[in-house]
Amino acid sequence: MTQKDAKKWFFKCLAILAALLGLTAITVVIVDPYFHYHGPFSFLSYKLYDERYTNDGISRHFDFDALITGTSMAQNFKPSEMDALFGTNSVKEAFSGAGYQEIADNLDRALTRNGKVTTVLWTLDYNGLLRDYDWAQYEEYPTYLYDNNPFNDVSYLFNKSVFYHNVLSNIERTLSGEPSVTMDEYSSFRAETGLNQILMSYDRNNVNRDVPTEFDEQAKDAVTQTITANVTALVNKYPDVTFYIFYSPYSICYWDALNIKNTLQRQVRAEHTATELLLACPNVRLYNFFDRYDVICNPDFYSDSGHYSAEINSRILQWIAGGDGLVTKENYLDRLKEEYEFYANYDYDSIYN
Image 1 (cartoon, rainbow, N blue to C red):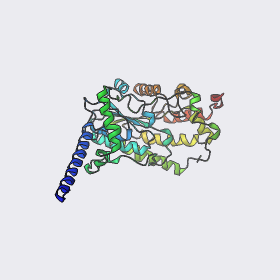
Image 2 (image 1 turned 120 degrees about the vertical axis):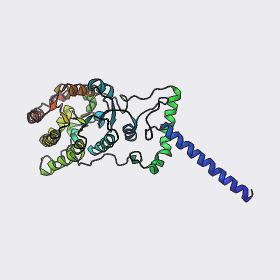
Image 3 (image 1 turned 90 degrees about the vertical axis):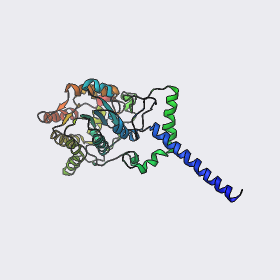
Image 4 (image 1 turned 180 degrees about the vertical axis):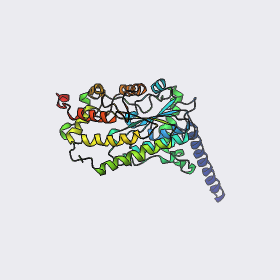
């Protein structure tokens, strides 16, 4: 091969490579499985999963005026049920295992981009009140999908995992006639429920007792920082949005663990502090379902000590729509007192007998 032929071959290879890369990028942009560039096309079928990759795209490009968010405690909410009860057009953006800060950051991006949002349904994980304000279970995030920097989009356009597991799978779904995953189905899960299922992950004989038990000034400051930085600062930034916030109603086994660790009073006092901060915001409607003993004391509604079944998500929507469980400045002290007395004196041994 002459030097001239070698040059031709080299540039031909470069041209082919550039063409293949361009075709790949165009395909990713068109299919756009995480909705980074546009909303869903009617002629494509989407599997709609990977919350931390998809939620920001939903915020950017979906049409909605209400948003459901929270951790796995929010995954089984059905936007269609919320819409029927509240007259909204809602989407769901849950983050399994998230801390308060991650959810707040996503909410801020969503509300900044979508000025039509008037309603937010927000699950506050009760066991997160005493964590650090910036506690995070996950350290790596697809931040290239969260910003408006076109240069770091190469991590999306030329991502082998995105192309094979998302772009091609969506094309395959489309060609096979499989419908898109609905917003009701998105991020939802099914799990076996009942006491035997709970006991697979909860052993009351091996509860960690090496934990702080006093609610001192340091603990109060921690709760204040967590709520102020991640909730009330955001709520006050968007005064025209109504935030329906509720503490996640864990099972009676969760309360059993608090008693075994001698941290029940600490947890209730943390709730006291958080509640006062939230009630100071005029656009917050705060709910507490810890007095729904028919649910909390029935293991058949739970798959572990914390996670309730989809039926409870539906009930929570109905309770909120009906004003049941509403916490006010007039009733919160009485509710806290009743809550503490009930869970401090409950016969926990009877659960397991």
